Length: 447
Ligand code: 9WN
Image (tube, rainbow, N blue to C red):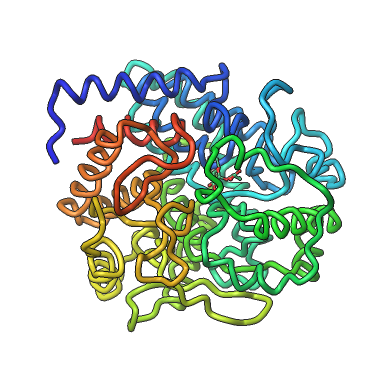
């Protein structure tokens, strides 16, 4: 689909208006009502969007997020910044992160889990978009963020991978892709899940519960939060007793790409990037690639998650299976198999799809639901990662299609929605979702 110059300017204006409307000054609400706080990976994509409007503001977004970094290096998945007029459930009292010495001195309340580390990708993109005249001013800010990002990656490569497998262990479905069927079996093992009385706000806010996780899911999400709180968010204790420990190939792939991004920025960040940081980043990236190669199935052409507690493979067809692409695999055979799987009838080649975009779950999976969140809908940010990775891998024609189809989807649906129905192409979830507008700004400037 061609984006004409006129419509491009108009769409840019509309996307920028979403970021401005959700702007709280130094951080951005993930969406106006459903997600009124600062979310970790949302903020990284949002910074990319801001970089097209105001590079200083883009960096501020990342600086604010990293001001809530724990002493362990963890960057929390939510930083609770909205006032009482903007309710969100579950709030900070469910997390009570002050039980952890690593969070005790923070200036703000947070959750105790994390999300995929897309931040270094954002920092690199922000720097690329920094005009020459601003570089002397922006560079010291990049240098100041750099060691914080290295600490963040160190946390993931060590505390979240005590086995040194190259694969990151997730502790909770909220660490990225909430109700993905990837977690179904692990959640089903939790028999007693009574987190105490609670009232959800998301389903009433959205008005259509079929687009959101079920109460069965929420019981387990909240119960797992209680388990983590009891462990005082201590990774060693969590590893000993937590019932939900999963080697997440998507999360791990993002870490590989993010390590490569920090290596790309190392000379710029000098002297903040030490020789030993560089060695560590290269080692983690290499280990991550090897870990993913070990989870790759030549038969399906996909990578599979792994349940640490049961030792089982999680053999489902979801977007996460494309971890080698997201990690920028250097293995030509793996890439060819992934490209075949991507355009097969299980994914983008499915004739029922409105746009040739990667759905969160394959329509061929029994768990697929076209309206339900991570169980089928198309998420623009995931397709941004796909576009970005395909471009870096030299598959520019396929990357251009992802970009064109994504812009076409948003324009036709008339909304920067949180996610889209893969068959009808209609908008789902929250309207005016910040990270969707942000990636649209990047796509509109990139073709
Ligand atoms: C819980 C903000 C976040 C995204 C997540 C997405 C969704 C929250 C929710 O919204 O999760 O963290 O309440 O459903 O799954 O990826 O960061 O946009």
